[in-house]
Length: 99
Image (cartoon, rainbow, N blue to C red; front, top):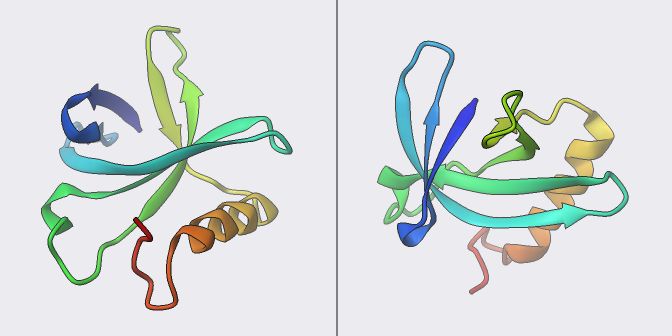
């Protein structure tokens, strides 16, 4: 998926393979020295005030043209476990983000 960054309130527009756009808010990003990659957690902007949100995680990778970044799905189970563990350290027991 390609990503278009809007620096206001860390908003990101994702464009899928069909050209459909959806607005997301960035929860946070982190780098993993073990995996040598950067990751991002995002959620749909329309869910911002909902009791529960659908948090998604992606690898941040330079795009093929070298003029931006793409969000790449995490497909390795061990890598996904590491990313999920990072997210869980930022969530409280009720699944709420610790501010």
